[in-house]
Length: 491
Ligand code: UD1
Ligand code: MG
Image 1 (cartoon, helix red, strand yellow):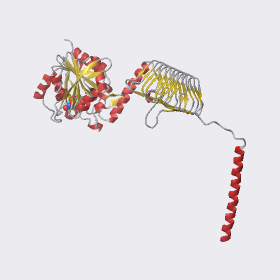
Image 2 (spheres, rainbow, N blue to C red):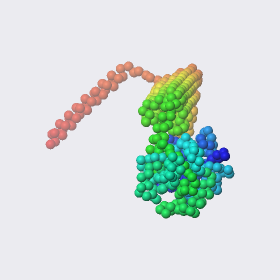
Image 3 (tube, helix red, strand yellow):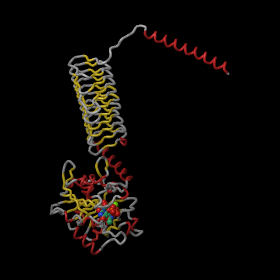
Image 4 (cartoon, rainbow, N blue to C red):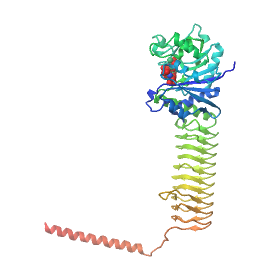
């Protein structure tokens, strides 16, 4: 029979130990939420449906964040929500999925919503374990030195066949059982008969006397269930507080960076790079120490991202060099050099061979190929042609206190240092602006614009000023002596 798969994610628990106003499943790890990491692990298994079992407390936030479908870019799956209220345990939670399950589903993978490090290769093993043993269900298990808090796996007579006799929860375990270090991951592959079996279990086994809950692990007592031992405890671990969130993020980051290294990216001090999962890097990209690459940033072949760059939704071409650059919502074409200490704000587009030097800020600026902003400029709301040279200290005055206006600069324009350009303004191709100018009127092509007071040299004036100052000083000193003599006489 063909497998028609649904995934049920258990998410009705309260994230008490997170001490957060939002569900722990909506906290992010490398740019995507914990629950999205879980869904990413199941999508390659081609489920027809994902059912989220939520509580009344997180219904709205899960729905509004996740919507009715989930896509990882390659495939899309329907998301269905079902309420568990009150939460009567994991078995009861799974039963809430039954009424909303799509017609014809044969198999169900059950996952806790808070285990973001699971991957599809590990989940795939659940199918193999079930097929090899001929069991009806399978459960992912792992060995750990500290099994505290987990359900312990008790094998039936022949450990080779992998069939589980029972799973004993920590709260219900005997002293001896607590030494068992094979634990239940809480991840299962179940046949669709599970609902009927869970109802039978509720009648025959009932609730745990200790925790007053219906246990999903009791399914192993209702139908033959195979243990599928996974060799990596990390991949099944859940997160319950912010320390574990940070740990999970470090593990995921490490895996991300290693996979980019395999893909041909050099990291200098890789452990100092923070990045999101949606970042894309070409071969021969090099990332220096202390860099942050987030929100879909892409970097082209041969580009060197030097020390201390923060790239947020930046699209960077090939063979560029950046050093100490912050770029947000920007496009950078090929062979561009930026930095150090540059702030590229949203809407910046640097075309091929542009050079942006130190202490420069840009915003909403389209800088044509080969143009240079070597040092200390503010260029906002502007369009620059090709081969434009902007002198040090030039300011594009785009704001009149109420509105923003644009400045157009043609090809081959030269702006002298320390000029202020008042928007709205057009400076046409080939024009020159003399340094220190305040430019308030349009400049025609090939014209020289001088917008400052003319310099005048007054011969000998400086010497005259110095002598005047010296005379004044002498006069004051004499007056002081006179005052002191008078004061002495009066005593
Ligand atoms: C559960 C397993 C345990 C396993 C461990 C792995 C049971 C009884 N025990 O224990 O064998 O080793 O997971 O982490 O299943 N949930 C609901 N509704 C409920 C109760 C729980 O949706 O009524 C959800 C929680 O939000 C969570 C998941 O089910 O995502 C697991 O519940 P949790 O309370 O964490 O179970 P554990 O005690 O950790
Ligand atoms: Mg748990």
